[in-house]
Image 1: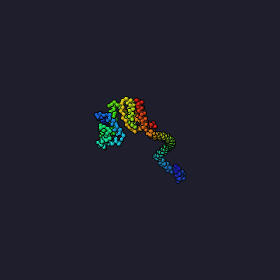
Image 2: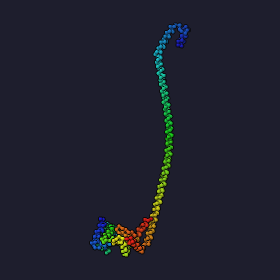
Image 3: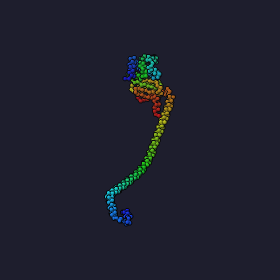
Image 4: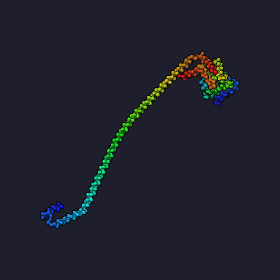
Length: 177
Length: 173
C-alpha cells in the first residue's frame, strides 16, 4: 500500500491519487484479484507448511525432552550403579579383611595344634626311648647278673654239691608223694 | 600210627623173639646216649651220601663186643632206613613199650653228674611211690643241666635242675 501511495505521490499531476481514476481502479481490482488468488491458493499452503513445520518443531522438542528425560534416567542409573560399585567394593574389602582375619586365626590355631602334636609325639618318643633304654639296661644287668650267678654256681659245683643237690631232689620227690 | 611207633613196635617184637627185651632196650638206650652226645656220629649215620653198608659197618664197629647181635642188627636197620635222626625217639618208645610190658613206667633222668647206685635206688623208690607203679630209671649225664636232676615220666617233667633255676632267675629280672 505504501508503495502504491508512493507511486501515486509520484504521479505526473503531483497529487496522491492519479488523475486518471480508472487506472487506479483497475490497479485496485488487479491487486484484489492477485491478492485473492494468493489468499485462496498460496496462503493455505503456506499455512499448512507453517503448521507442519510447527508440529515438526514441536515433535522435535518433545523428542528432545524425551531424550533429555532418558538421559536423566540413564545418568541416574549410572549414578546408582556407581553407588552400588562403591558398596560392592566396600563389601569386597570388608570380606577380604574378614577372610584375612579368619586365615590368621585358623593358621594360628593350626600352628598351635601342630605344635601340641609335635610336643605330644616328642614326649611319647622320649618316654619310649627311656623305656627302651631301661629295658635294655635291665636286660644287660640281668644277663650280667645271670652270667655272674652261673659263674658262681659253676665254681661252687663240686662233687659234694652235686650230691647234695641230687639228694635234696630225691627227698623232695619222696616228700611230695 | 607214626613211623616212629611202627619201628618201635617192630624192634620190640624182634627183641621179644630174641628173649631179652629188657637187655636189648637197655643197650639201645645206651647207644642212643652215645649218639646224642656226638653230633659228628649223628651226622655221619644220617648222611645218605654214605653207602648204607658203610654206615652199618660203623654201627657194628662201635657196638662190637659192647652189645648183643640183636641190638646191633636193630640199630643197623634204623640207620640203613635213613632214620638215624629219629633213633632217639624210636628207642624211647621201645624202652617205654618194654617197661609197659612189665607193668612199669620209664623215668628218663638227666643229671649233670652220674648217679650212684644208692641215689638211683632211692630216686626209683621215690618216683615209684609218687606214680604208683614200679619205675625203670634211664639215667643220662647231661652237662646242660648244670646241677640237680630233670626227670621225665610220660608227659610229666619234674625239673630240679640248676639250669631251670637260673632260667627262672633270668625271667624274674
